[in-house]
Image (cartoon, one colour):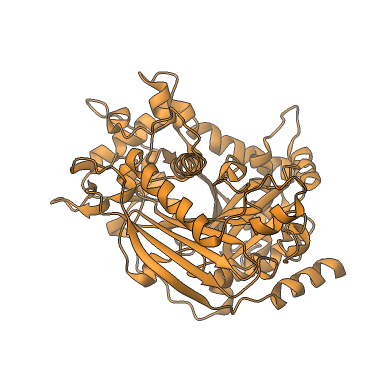
Length: 490
């Protein structure tokens, strides 16, 4: 159960200002500083597995003038918000020279497949002002404080493009930089590379890093060969049932941001390890989440209700050993992902010890974390083109009570996204993808103390379980936790 302290923290989060007004100061299109020649860039077979989805990311920065005033040596230069926005915008135009597909457009070819038109269409760039102080941002509830306010929401604005950016001045002088990426063009690894390169450029930190867009790295084999088991992992989009209509408040997907203390992560890893096998922190966390979600399922007993867990696997490291250009694959921009999943009855998950559930998670990952799996997946897509598929764990099927996907953001480079006035005081991904499948992404805390920041997008009834039965693990993000990062407003 929640402690009195945790209940007070949640109430404190609820009392924070979410109904603040965001005013647009300017809206423009930023293009690559040096226009590249116009051409078409095909999607890889792994890109074709991603439906048309956007994901967001945002970073919160201190009032740099207040920080400079507190610094005796005044080594931190004073900048007006307008100048800071100018630095960000200029660096964006320069970074887009190398990351040129990010200022292109996704269009469909004659087969109905998406392709990238690299035409320097540009990036939608908004400069905004929000009448709220950093300390009053309710980051615990990003649906009402971040989505469409601090991170662009292209589904409501109707603006096209691979990347959209919004830089928002806050009442206290702080800044929030929010970005929205087309997931068909970039995965989290790709976005991380871009964000770091963008910040490096802003600081005039010359780097020899160059992104790779060589689709030949992920070409299918001739002839293609794949595993029959992939037919169980993926489903043709044409066979998807119509989305269900839900009026029940518990059937709403809601986003939350929690922090998980490092000692709880260590405890979960200890409980999940057994029989001489030490499970990874991600495996242990995923197993605990799976068990916890099962506690909130309506099914149980002998009704046969089942619960699925998917874990996103990045294939770059798995495929580098035999790749003719390993460095190019590591710097490859695009999707190199697979989402293996496991399924168990609600009753089984509730009764099995954490170590037993973690063993199932490990087995699920072990089967997919191999080069052979990704080569077979590329071939599987090739055999089924132009019909497009989607990973089955995203789709609720008969007998399935719940499903959740875990994606590791533990390499999220939050401390490296420094545009010249210091590292962010906070950063997080934001991915309210819809449907009925939950999404959970753990990331490192800016405190660098082993804590995790965890973005959670789940049905309300499962969030209720997290905040009651697992409140010792999932702590609501609030200004009390962030006070060691955010200075008091001046």
